[in-house]
Length: 454
Image (cartoon, rainbow, N blue to C red; front, side):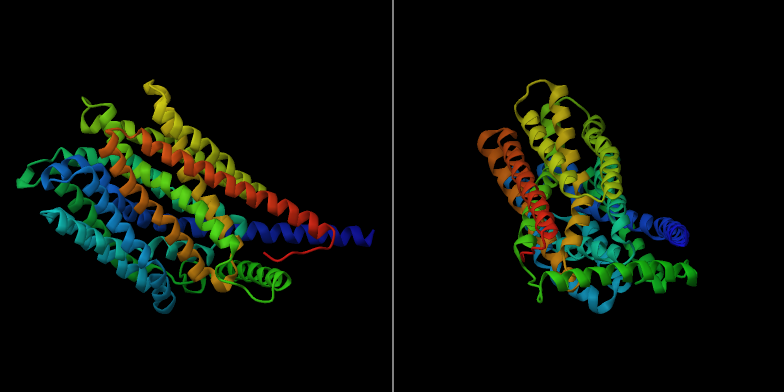
């Protein structure tokens, strides 16, 4: 009887603690996460708006499909090279100072894209934007781990990653309207796009300087009890992770097989996301040659609208089940099928469904993937590990920007490029399947008292 009473008391106490933590997490969502979402929206917009203005920009500057792809390649070369150094600077200077600084820099540089006069000036400006943006996403992913326990992290990542489909969806429509400002005050439509979409970043950068807390201890909008609840939950999780890492291995290798496979999976995911952002606007405009820029923007937005709903459902379900492997594998498999549909089916509605599947697979898996990758990294390796995976993954955009531009010039079609995207989604799905099978084997080994180091 006494034992049952103790168990009931323990369960009640645990439930109350969880309710308190959930309340604090909701407050962090309201006060912090939605602001980070806004930052990422403008970051992502400055990264992809060159895809929306591709036709006008190429016509004014005399760019071929290959040289246009090279402009994106240059951005990602510098983005990749400066990812890890940027995270080290963030570690030294703090999130508030470093993130605020790089946001202002890329806002200024992106606005200056409006005044590019030829290929060389465009390449230089895109390089500067790439350097500035390099530290934002890996820095924010690391920052989120300092605010959200793993039980809430996939959903938090999903809300943060919502910036990508949201920006691509509404950004395409907004940019379509801005492009209609062609010749206003003597500027082309694409010049107005870079000016009007780059300047808000400068304002946001100064807001970050003034308002962003480095850690939960610095949050003025949390009272002491709320700070303690959140900090205790995070510290308890870190203690458990350290305990597990001690059991698994006496020393942690920064680059091991799991990190490499994570990087390869992310490479496959980013390939699809990059193709959606950079090339789908041109794929749609080629398929609908008589459509207005606004109508083209609306059609481009449809896959992203589908993705927003899929992203929330998949990430919430992943957190609820505390399962990451199959929630990544199945969408990637569907994404590979989607690219094949878009490339080879001649019925417009089926091609659009294919693009919806590919878009859903690329963007909706990101939140789950980063929750999975974070759980796979030792605490001591997260600063460089996250940046490393992000850098390797984003090198996919370098490859796809160059390769798809080359294939388009060679074949006068985007079909071969979409076949490339399909192949990588299938490869990524196979790697995630290997993770799932290995985890199942590890569970069986642990049940039998056997552990094999990675």
